[in-house]
Image 1 (tube, one colour):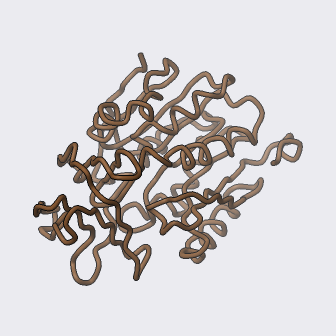
Image 2 (tube, one colour):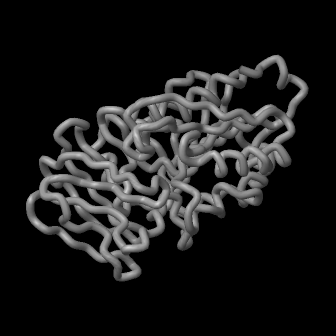
Length: 300
């Protein structure tokens, strides 16, 4: 079994709630009967608006709402950091929702997990040590485990409830935790990275939320500098990097910051799939490489 370590955590969640719309509604869900919860600010987190449907509303995609028909609510709970819900949808299998924001659906989770993992790990020779920041559902771990050269996989996720719920309701995703190479650290990923000795990892994969509120730290220079310090020469980091159709200004800022820190190359990549987090549009990842004498021979 994989090893589990609990480290000191702070208020910074790696998957935080989106800022609320001006009218105060951040997300809606219903099963034909009103279900209301309150978040830490006392504003509605989940409410019944369209009977039988879950609708995600976020300032990250203004003027749009993403909805899935709900067959059954399988789990509702509140961790120290966020509201956690799992429901059975009519068309996309089970769905994991954190603070009203869809994190994955059974039907299409593979597209995101595969892209954010295999692009970076296939771009360098024989990665051995990999760190995952966030990604508590375990999907990235599952994909990292497919690389036979990998000897050590560390994951730092702040919310243990996300891990436990994923193991219970998404066993085909969370199977990554069963890999004996995996060590789970429950705690703040930013603090974890700052404590990592220089040149520890061949690859760092940041499965984070959007750059709003506290999670903004994961998209700024100091965080990337910590990542650069944790990477060996020739290492690679890959992070969720938003939609080219909705968030070009965010992508430009990230690229500009990373080009100042990483002396190798900075590349944006995208694919298409029915992604309810990003308006059925393109969702991208950004790969950044540390400079090494071998770098040019291994660029992809």
